[in-house]
Length: 606
Image (tube, rainbow, N blue to C red; front, side, top):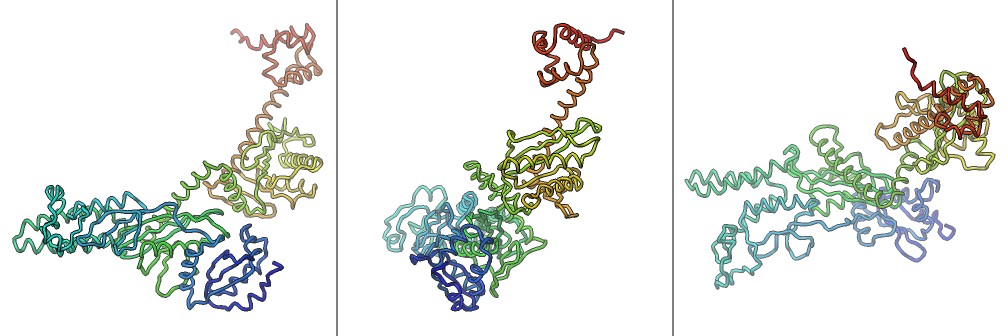
């Protein structure tokens, strides 16, 4: 920043709405942004603590060598100008709203006796395009409706009045089977054909109700004039239209013309869904993905995507249903955050779609790159638990004892949200007498981190204590003795309600029962309990057998210790052969021990 005096640049920027542009030393445009107050917005990049920025924002600010701006009358004008400039210049640090695929459109061809078909290419030839359609199925459903209801030509003959008058064409099979009325031989007038096209355009615009009312009027008139053939033909058309309307109507028909947008995002990506609703019918829908560049807020992304959708779908609605209040203000647009009713249901439908799309996309990415899942989980845990750093190394403690006897502590280690079993450890409690869970926890935590400090090992970012406030306080006491209470975060988890406790905070933290953060903590807790119980049972069994062995005539304390040290477990001692036992005991002791085990397995006779 030594080559750029931002303070001098800021003095030239007014407190007005507009668009600002950041340029680098080579004169390349890096970023375009909009602001309600240009000086305040631009100044925020330089006045904030640099540590609050993400990596890309720090890089952007460090490369700024020139700032240009354009003043506009209103914030909505800034919004429109920003969108058009981003599309034109596509700066490196701006988010990209381009789709990763080409969506289909329905075209009403500009020609005499227009054809109607679908295409993925939009050409500026005067034709009318409807779409794009996010669902191929929805588009084909509409085309099938048109084909079933209206008889239109499918040929590409140049049907001008001169060619028709000169009789250059003959009717084809489509005419013979009733799919076309033969305009090529003037069997159908252009006026009648265009009336059908006008009705179809109404349907494609979502105004199917208007078409139905017109059809009903024709049926009534035809019936009054005793033109039963025409009335019957339009009755069939009415049935098809009403059947389609009943399938496509998802909300109250009183909702005439609104847009609906919703967003789901994480630290890397945002996903925005759009619904275009007319006369209670969703006529278009699409979800797009946005890769974040500069830690953009949901407000910023939703606002930018909303304009993109409205431009693409030629929306003229004056009301937009949104999930939260936007900073954007426009007297010609009404932003609604519904609390209940049909509009709330519409928003929920949009949110359901965007959440499903997000889940599917992230699953695809994580299958291709498992590290993405790890990064996402760790980032989520950091946010949920209010940590200052990613919890790449987590340790969890649990205690076990049996009526105060054989107390043990266990520690399990997770690295990158996965068990690191080679780092698991057991502790035989040395300084605690009787069933004192708090003192046991205090000893285990002290011994664990005393050794890590002595061996200069890196400390974990997060320590989890299986227990409530008492166990947590004991752990904190040991961390203070070691002088590391401010170097690691320690929390306790109480089993009954899955409450998370922080040192010095009397109020617990409750996480969503379905959250990945809680699932990882529960997995750590359960793994520590399993590991601790396994060791405790082994120690208890050894203690029981040792006492039992010492009571056998000829097997004293020394021999019992040798057996346990050599065979490691109770099971292996009982399964050992005479030859294997002879490696530890003398011949007489071996025979005595074998006889003892044999009698133990033989049931007493009544």
